[in-house]
Image (cartoon, rainbow, N blue to C red):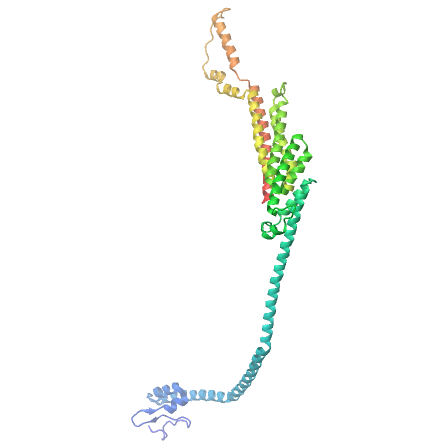
Length: 434
């Protein structure tokens, strides 16, 4: 088929087929540059492999569509070239402007900010040095003030323990001295500045000797007041022990004092029934035990506030421990006396050896009665009377047993009430201490 001849298919004027190189191979370089690889493949596979006019027309139609698409894209690129060039020009202007700004910024940083930074650094270092000097001056003033306070306390203690014998003031000076740290009291500066011609010893030695002297003095005065029964003096010296740092000594001597009072009161209540019929009453010993518990509870209730006020929260527990030991001793004396007076051991022995003849006979078969009455003075009559008397002597009086059980129940009830009271007081002390 001759292209362009009559009765043949004519290609559009803008379509050019690839040229042949004389060896059956077509030149497709220019075609692929214009239409791309897809057009090249389409022309190679479509046109040269076509076997009919319809296939050629279809291939040419696809090539035409591809040409239109490529042309539209090229037109769009050409149309946008002006905008792209304009934007590129603006970017160039902005880059030049930013470059000038960067140069200016670097010059400002080198010229102004570096000076300001160095000035700020110098100021910061100066402030740090000033704070350090201020802290050192403050620490020095604190040490000087504490040493002055220590010297005043030492002179005050020795002066109060002299002719005035003002024990409260001396104890107050010791209490003030105890608030000064040990590093100051034992330090070389205090050892150099505090001693005087009247008090040449170091401050720690002077304070220790004063505390020991006052402790012995307070103990003697407390014991003398306790023997005299002077409650005002007892309270006075009892308050002074914690001021000199001897709280444990004060609580110990106070515990002995109240325990002596509890013991004397318990003995007085127990001896109240001596020489009379009071001990034979059903609840004498139960009442004595009740009075013992009430006395201890009254001491704990009334003295607890005083102890916690001057010795600290929770310190009443130590006194309660001493009181409980004394309660065990005095309560044991009352229980032992009650047991001896009521012959409890013998009653228990009788109960264990009780033959229960009535119960035994109730389970035995009935014995046949003898016919006839024994004559007077016969051995059978004498044996029967002896057996009845032995049963009466060996019997256990249920009324006595009922009285014993009632008295035991009263004692246990009072003990239970007292135990709950002491437990509640100890719990309150433990909570306040924690």
